[in-house]
Image (cartoon, rainbow, N blue to C red):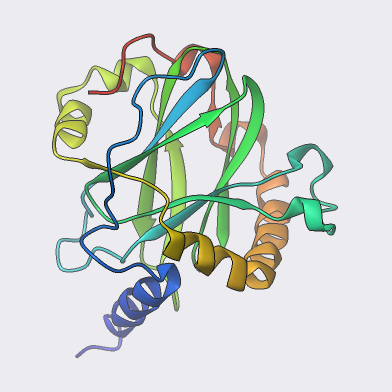
Length: 213
């Protein structure tokens, strides 16, 4: 085993413990795949890993509450709401009120995507993973309308299975909230210092009327 590859094994072991999920992908009955009336639907999609020898385990994805008050996230109301923990080739549906939101993926650090969404629209966000120093680094990427029509993206959707938030994922979030919030604060301070052009953003016009395939 090379020194270079050792962190990958650490990442895999950590990610499996991170989510506290059992069973194949934590799948349950399929959720609704159309926006609830007056809501926006955001579909978080975990594509196959670029590195075929490792999939980085499951990726925990959250909505960061009280995003308007960040970085002063220090009250109990600022605790992030877990959306799901995604293995490769899975997707999870999340219904939100129209307007501004902040989502994050937490691994070695917390990385964010801001969103401004419209009612009765469906949006897609890719959940990506890459090796970090000790743990995986997870990130979120908006999928615009042009990319949604690409063959590559359509193949990702066709090969992905629906999952929902499991009790194990909720238990993981509750028992690890102190660590999650710490990485949320640190990661947001780094993220907000970047130029706006370098901060991932889900735009109102990225939404579509069609249901997820």
